[in-house]
Length: 123
Length: 107
Image (cartoon, rainbow over all chains, first blue to last red):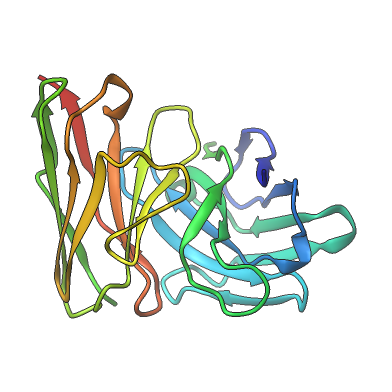
């Protein structure tokens, strides 16, 4: 049973950075594609992009600011989302999610989700 | 970007009744549509993909239909654990996009 466990809630000042982790267990991390999705308070879901850990290739949604970076550490089966120059509008719950497909032809369907990490940006 | 529109925003249903949720795409996505369930404090759960294929472990009371631009999620007989927010998502084109959600509440 694959699980994704995310790091805890963060409160950050405007202009600072945050790095959210997403640790996978119960499966083969190298076979995954991990997407990041965010949800602002009271709003819907926004796909931010994904990373393929085995090759370290990241793709970002065009609407996502150039301030975001996805990385992955295969040795610890952990994916990371770092967002810099934080603004109040970055306040959201950030989710990682695993692609349904494993090992090459990605479906962009998410069968396992992390529990979410609340990031609050406030002075 | 493909815009996904869900209706209604809120659906009030009594336990045991049928719930029908709609999702419309701004252009054809063939059958590249998934449905998710979100409950407070819980991870999102994949229900349906390919517009009509139930994900592993999803009860048969959940069914999906549609193609092109119009899609439906039907919950045949609502159980207490089904009261939640439901989102549709298209994966036909990047960026992947979600609908605004339908909240299914107890009537």
